[in-house]
Length: 226
Ligand code: PRT
Image (cartoon, rainbow, N blue to C red; front, side, top):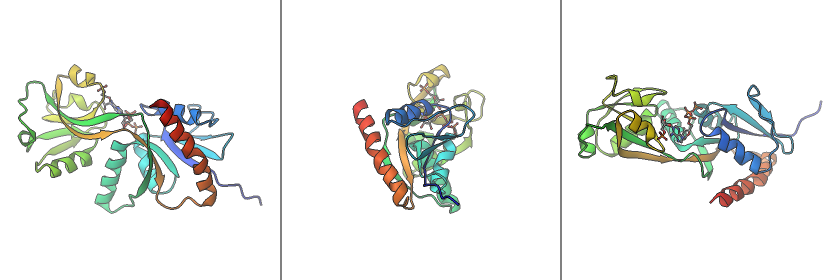
């Protein structure tokens, strides 16, 4: 029986806002990978690395549970999962190996344009539609206000207009989506960008050697982009 050498497994978003930048980063690091839409586990041909292509929201859990050695994910998704798992006592540790310079956005509270915003206190008792309730709850607690939330996985900006919520708390980059939906940003809750994360348990010598080859390349690409 032949025992194959360990391969470093990296989780990345299959399709969405982080997938093109992640794929470009890996290619600029010299990884030869053949990504086709149907192949969810792509082999890198010139290094012992496999790329697992999944939903962004699954990446923190896959790394925290040790299914993947590394993951590239937005800090918003990462911290939401960390807080959610803490609530139910699930394993939620990881190492943030390096921040990456793409996927920048802010997680902000936005209210209808006609709302008279006078400070965080005026949001007390209101209801917000959001995809990241734990991040919002943490912010509310830190600022001494009580908020209610309703969970929406997409089209969050429509919630106030249809009477589902008083306001929203969502990711913003240009602000164009808020404007198009009659909303204004009133408070920034969290600043996010993509990060490379690593499972908390030691990788073992062979996988650590692969990471030691990969990491300086990632940092070099990031530096060149600055
Ligand atoms: O579906 P999956 O589980 O893979 O993840 P996802 O639903 O989070 O996917 P995706 O592709 O929408 O976002 C992936 C990650 O990209 C997010 O978790 C963030 O870390 C990052 N990112 C950066 C953003 C944005 N910018 C962003 N603007 N994610 C979403 N948006 C959306 C926002 O929700 C809003 O609807 O873009 C709209 C606002 O954009 P502007 O430019 O009009 O302000």
